[in-house]
Length: 325
Image (cartoon, rainbow, N blue to C red):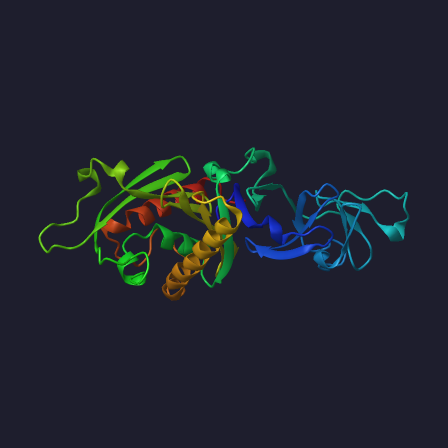
């Protein structure tokens, strides 16, 4: 994973008040709960005393109580009370576990995976989506999160994997695509056309009006949006579980209809369509080997793979720059 990054790890609705939640993310077992103000807290799910799972415990006054011996943990992962030593006994500074800074907005919870002194103020999000309503679902994929991301950067597969849905029309020739990167945001412009048997695919530098094309965006480390129109978007968060598993959160966003019942119907319809499309992807992506992608692999990439190439290049740059010590 890329170090010193904000990662979406789950939807807000999954973390209820009054009960800890155990999740595995970024190869770590994490315990999450909401404090007395409803704020998300996240620490390592392993008591520093005897190694029990803290997520099996209780929430006491916004703090997390270990189920084994009643140690009380605050959101910084520090033990603030050891019942066996007495209420007034000092707690050694060594009695603590790893904690993770959280951020919550847009219906998601992020954690900062990295050095505390390098924390960005808040994570990036496609803020214009605040004005949209949405429906969502999540799906478990037995792949490294980089493979799931690359699938959404792949413009060559559409007429084959999605022949019956978004890839209909047999547009097999890929012009470009043109890829523009601004810091951690990659925008790629897509122009797939039918093969007339005469005209070769245009190279990216041969396309002058690319900003008029359909486009998609990815922001490191793990969120993506498909700009279907001014009023319809598809969104995904690719959440790393471990080196071989990913949770994909998909949202269908729209602002075409705001009448309550019709809005719900449209959002539901968009959700069903998104599930069908995603499952078409999943069927082939889970067969890819190796499970994890790298900058240099035993693959023979083509011009149409430029978004994937650019993603891998900058991902490796970030890994090299922020490698975990």
